[in-house]
Image 1: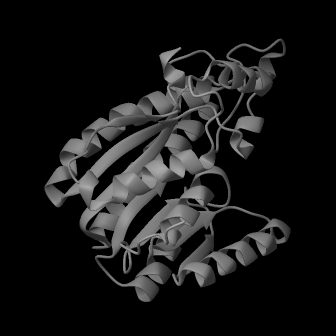
Image 2: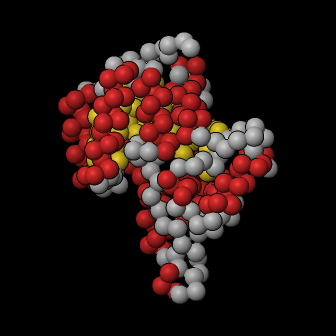
Length: 267
């Protein structure tokens, strides 16, 4: 097996939501190719201990720097603390990738048997900010602080649930639909800074976020039996696509929605 090239040496990725699932897999993949990682997450002191050991081992194995930030990426004060610390440690014009992988939302029906268990407009607002609109706050902040390099990428993650009915998924679906529109506008308006914005629509993947969706077993069954390539999508499949979008060869890909699902969306 050939040794991965280190074409991203000196670059940084800022990963929002990188303690598990797609975010952690992306950190692993990019570190293998020499990219330093600033990873934001929310974990308890107990679960963070193991996570920090994994980051430490990943950094040592690939000779990269990994800066962990256990802060609220959706909070203005949290963002300010990150910028202050990151700028001192990484410097300016170094961020090749901003990856938005935050999975935080309300999973309620529009109308429950008990009205108090129904999805509220506040639920929708909080979910939409977490899983969609927060990407623009982060993008503008990195740009204003001169942290993006001269050929940067912004990548968001969406799912088939943006266009299909999944039980209890309404708030997230609304957020993902919003993200599609937002990414289109970002692709155009950030292009003058040579920043490319794209979305990845991952196939149904066994992640901690999937396990929270009501009826997730039926989604897993669908993906297992209907994927043209005969298996479910893995976090590593998505991480591979994130890596590809960061390469020099992907510099002309902007405003795209990339299906990374083995053809699952064709059903």
